[in-house]
Image (tube, rainbow, N blue to C red; front, side, top):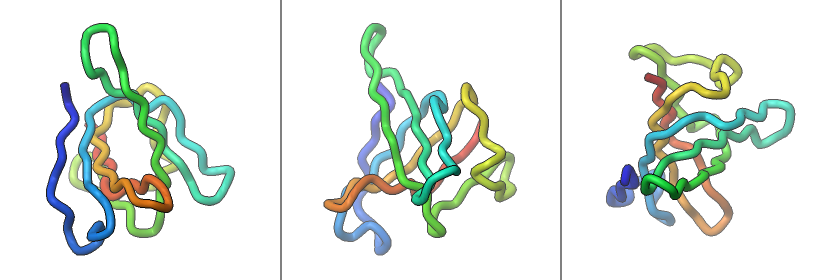
Length: 97
């Protein structure tokens, strides 16, 4: 299982922070807020899908360099750090392999 729980930081004080490793299922830049959907395996036969809002606070990185959300393609493998709050799920870091 690849679900990790980190203690909240200043940005995420009102929610819980999680980190998952998985495959990008969708990226939506046509609507606001932008979204990313990542599917991560929990067990051999069970997956979890996380849909997170991508905001100006989201850091998107490939090989140490910041990139735009539009450059992420379905099927790519990512580490997604997200915060679950009362008003939704927010991507904090999207790190591409």
